[in-house]
Image (cartoon, rainbow, N blue to C red; front, side, top):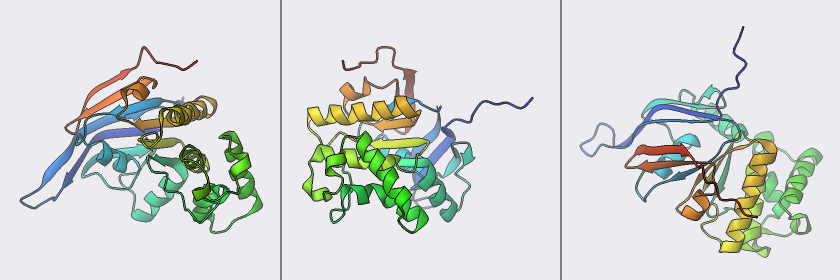
Length: 242
């Protein structure tokens, strides 16, 4: 009987990353990373500056290629894909939330959320608008859907960015310091929203943060130091806001 267990959302096997390969200044930044995230996990990736977090996130996000090892996204081996195939997999399976939201200032909140769908399908239709509008409603921004990105607050802009990250219904969301540019109140609101999406839809989240307060609100904490995972364990004392 075939194994009906669904594949891990993310799996890395012995992933290494070197720069300057074959030159006198070759340096290995990631040293054999093994990591697995199942569907619905909500994990924090922590570590000091220079530990390799950004390099690792770029590999997982298919923005760069490993020098060695294997990388799987939703059961598909991504480390063996060509550039076009990797772009297609990234577009449908991975959502990105950054510290700086990177919204297009000349476009409305609704238009910004639709951008990944437009990139994938080449044209706008009514279903795309409905999908984007429903996500903006979910993040509490229906009254601002037709406002340009420059006309809403920083916290609202980050909520638009979260809606944009979710519009293709990705299996995995990568959040790189998603609250690092916000005050405490807005940071808590953004974090609560990501947690709500995780719990209601089973979306897997990997959140890079320097904020120990936010890391302690994740279910699992992975620590990277000098390009190696030195700790990876469930957070048995998850802090939840009332």
